[in-house]
Amino acid sequence: MLEIEDKSVTCQHSANGNSMKILELKPEEFDNLVNALVETLPEFYIDPESIAGTLERLGKHAAAQKLRVKLPEVKNIRSGDIGEVITTDYIEESTEYTVPIRKLRWRDHRNMAMRGDDVIGIFVDHEEQTIRFLKAEAKANKALSRKVLEDARSELDLDHGLPAPHALEFVAERLRETGDHELSDLIEEVQLVDGINTNQVEHLLFTFTASNPATLQKEAFDAYSGNIKQGSVGFRVSGHQELITNVFQGVINGLDN
Image (cartoon, rainbow, N blue to C red; front, side):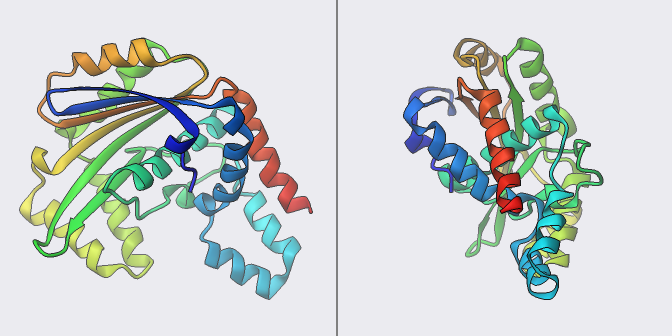
């Protein structure tokens, strides 16, 4: 786990039941975060059990090559992937939601962005057999802009603010393939039979930037007038590009050794 909040200085703001948080990575924690991401990143691309099986059957070189062909080479795709990884980790560390599917494992091509909702978090109350969803947009940019935030707002508001039907079906199908039939069935029941209400959904806008996101992100946060609970997190790393470069180089170096 990345323990982002423990590595950062935090500023918080709340209004009307919605919450916003600005995190700024402490300079002394930069290398620790790089190392944590180097360790975490591979499992977002390939199931560790799959890598272990290849290692056992075919050896270290084949296992390394299996991961190498999944790593993106394009700068903006790498940035987006790191943003999605950090967002997913934040959700699982700092909220009640889990992210049961690492969707980057199913990407068509390593240098192409995936379509659909960036991250979908799920919380199940097993006693009540109810389910809630966190629809998250992850934006990774060296400099945050109003256009980026407007795009994120538009994406969160698609499908009346609910998780996209095709994105939920993607999650349900992958869960079924990986053996979690209970959760897959529950997702399909609420989506296809019961219907999802806005009170079963929360939004998370997560930005990963070098620039200070506080002013623009608060402006966007305060402008929201809908009825879906909002969370907004700005994660600032002054060495944004350096972090991305170092993480992917660290993973590649591990494959070469």
